[in-house]
Length: 250
Image 1 (cartoon, rainbow, N blue to C red):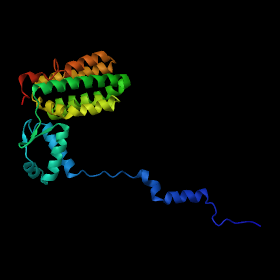
Image 2 (image 1 turned 180 degrees about the vertical axis):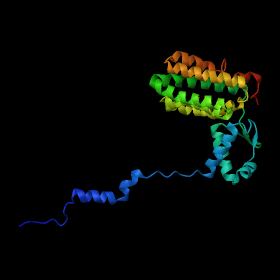
Image 3 (image 1 turned 90 degrees about the vertical axis):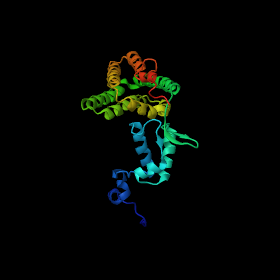
Image 4 (image 1 turned 60 degrees about the vertical axis):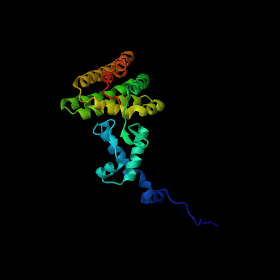
């Protein structure tokens, strides 16, 4: 006597057909949904951009009411945005006085330059030891964008690429602790770059040094690249020589 199963095993063909009919089987083809930015995130980006590009000058007072009116939103996301920018070091809150765009005195500037020099030189060495060709390719694209920006006199675009050049060292170094440490000063350095944007002598010197660093990395000459970088960023002989003029004093 034969026994017929009440639940016969499905054929491979029918299983495949069901898989094709199952919407979940096509989820890998669906584009991910991007979460829209909150009003606070939009305000953070907008205020940060105003600070980085110098439209909100260093030391300038920031009024929640005025910012809310300018951006057409309530004070709450503005207040939250200023709090976040304070954590980035771009905003300073003075009790019983108000909120201001950050400033630096000469001692703080020296400290930033020393910290930056240590981090960038360590990151550059790590990049070259890890994958110098990858770093060279990244920097080469950035320098090409610098050339294009200078060709049309777009200082803002050039300075964004300047920031990208130094950020590339931390993207490629393979050490997230170095990258996290750099974020402590990255926004301030971007702001200071824009403050110098009107000085053509500084811009030309900076551009030449970026090209020289790239050439040394491409040639595999780590010591030469490090020497040029140190001259580029250090407080003793770097491009930020303007600190001696007191132009960023409180």
